[in-house]
Image (cartoon, rainbow, N blue to C red; front, side, top):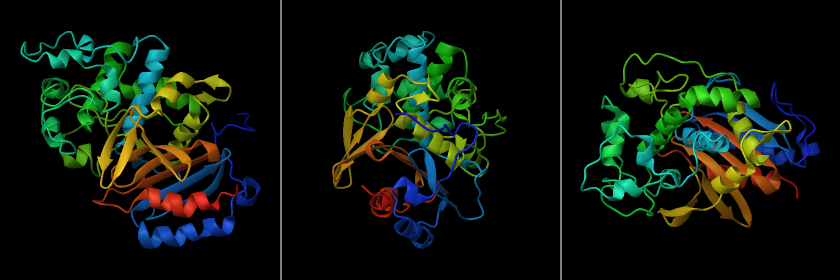
Length: 348
């Protein structure tokens, strides 16, 4: 798709009407967010490459970074793709244990040796915990998170059955470090963020590993484990505009300003339904650390994080919605806001 400009240095805003968006419908968003989505700190709606709508709440502004929680996983997915593109990793069928030759598995656990990158990317690796009941706090108390996760990997359950695991995404971050010699933060700064205009994520010392340092008010830059691996499943901080940049890169098949940052093949694979799980009453489909949805004939893929952090890409509408949120338990569903408040404003 040919673009008039690229938002590398700065986003350009445009009148919604020129972007074929009904501005009256968009204007209703503000009161809906204030009344029903009070933990949203920032929202950016990009149509045809221009900001059509942008608002900030709770004292935040466009330059403030937010902990985007599990949105981090989709960034890790992109980094795995870049590492495959440049040959650091061969392919998604490589066995996970091949990346950790120093690790000695229990001889009884044959299943562990069969688990591949594909299984980590699609959340189809087996673990000893029940689905959606991962004991993440236990991993965070370990001196060696990677060894702890490798020990947990492959126990109980079958390869190929969906089981959401944040620790599994952390293994992917460690694999990036093993294969590129750089932490995921360093690799992202060099190979992804710089190219698309996201400011360098600085390195901060982890003074301790308590809840506030790992998940709460002390989170800054990109959290890392005691051995210096960037957290693979959470812990990255971004501005809403930067979240939108990342979504826009995917919307453009990995191209940014005529340069291929991530191969189109990787983006196609990442947004293809490899696995599925039941959430409440509905079946949710999953790509390579991206959530996929087809509703009312509209296909979208999203990076989703706890508390309602979202990067939602809707290719056929040339639309990206980025939402940064304060973490709360059981936030209002962002998809409802996008489906009822944003998509209907787009004029066919």
